[in-house]
Length: 104
Image 1 (tube, rainbow, N blue to C red):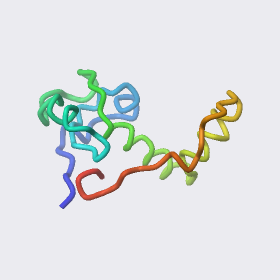
Image 2 (tube, helix red, strand yellow):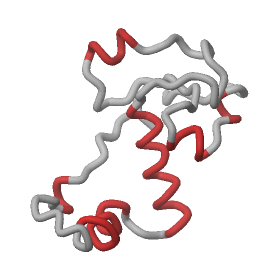
Image 3 (cartoon, rainbow, N blue to C red):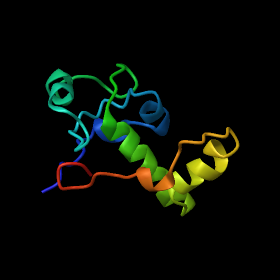
């Protein structure tokens, strides 16, 4: 079963996610063991109050972007950012989400 957000975590805003201050400390499948061990315990900080880099925040942002716009994030990144900035090494197919029951 996928982890569910507790009421305090549900108060996190998009701004909290963008600034790595969501207060949501679910594991993300892309994290290495050291990141999981160093992470704060669940419910230890309210949204907006504590900075901690968390892959979960950015996975959630990508999901929100795709649900709200109906567009794929990596294709839009290429179109709106990579190409205008001439990021010659950006390749859309390299962008991927690692999905599984522990990272939703």
